Image 1 (cartoon, rainbow, N blue to C red):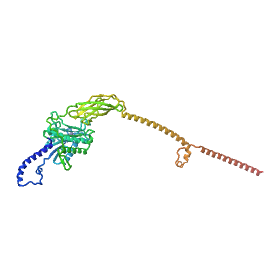
Image 2: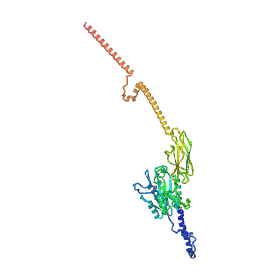
Image 3: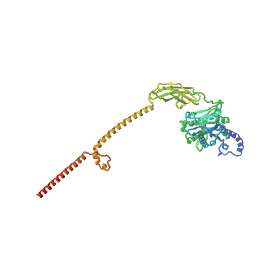
Image 4: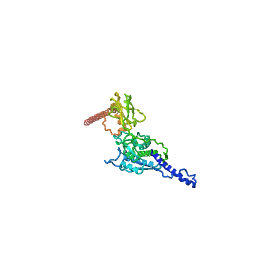
Length: 479
Ligand SMILES: [Zn+2]
């Protein structure tokens, strides 16, 4: 029986008791005084104390472990216990916007609490349901991704847990997370594996453990990177709970009174987890592109117990596998995908198909002919080499041209010297370079020299002539 049915039952029992008692008491009253027509039928019922729903939220972990490390997951600066508390606080605040519900947290600070203490607290406040809030990590990190809910494998704890988890997983999937399903898990004694669920069941308390997503996987990281997203998880959890308990809120303007929850029959036996690998897993290579290395694989796998969840592939015969990928459409037994295989190897294709419990079956191996296409890196390297050679040739050509230009300029500069020196700008600047004497300069110097020689010769002739004249004059005087 679902919790809300239980609540309805309380109300119905009270109503029935009331109706049984009312005729006897009202009969005598009716005799004395006629019923007021304005008074609505069943007005007395509303005066009865309303059975309040009590929900306890358990932010997973808290405090430090025996090794002095934080309890719960820690990865890349993200601390799970802190994230869980923020989710729980947001879930409480949101749930309190609904009517007739009381919400408690098992911890409001960073205390270390045992699982029994958490359940005992929930029982002490007469909880109707316990929600355990967590974030997940995979052992080797960045392997598993997606969201999941764990429920008890027993009786009404299974059916009530499952009915809630069905709403919750639907909402988390709509958010964009990959569903890892609603699951049970047993310990060696055949009891519920998760202590919080086991202790809750022992104390007659339905409990669901929500692993919102994997905080260490690149697929899930965008959903849990900060406070705003953790709070959004809390509000999402609250809405799922409100739907499950058929709550209504005037503040939010929503009424889930008629919300259709999944009818999960109470199992008579234990709802055992899947402990066997997928029943079928085989591959067929449908295409091989020799020019690009692209190989198309058709993978057919089935798990009759928990369905298919992931697959991963290897092209080296199972030595190494690519990261796990989502199966995608879980209603399909066959999926088609392409893989990029490097050249110069003999591809040996193997695929592993994983079921809902992360157990895998390895497929048949398909050997393919080697492909000698050039990889993008090789093409890029070749292109780079070609560009480099071209650039070197261009640079050499330019250097040669520059040298020729320089020579041409030098030759031109030799004849242009006089002209250049005549420009006012050139005159203004002192020319440090020594100019070679030009022809005209040489001729000028020769002319000056010649004129000087002629001048001196004339002067000598005139001097000699005047001396001769004076001698003749003196001779004439003596005579
Ligand atoms: Zn945890």
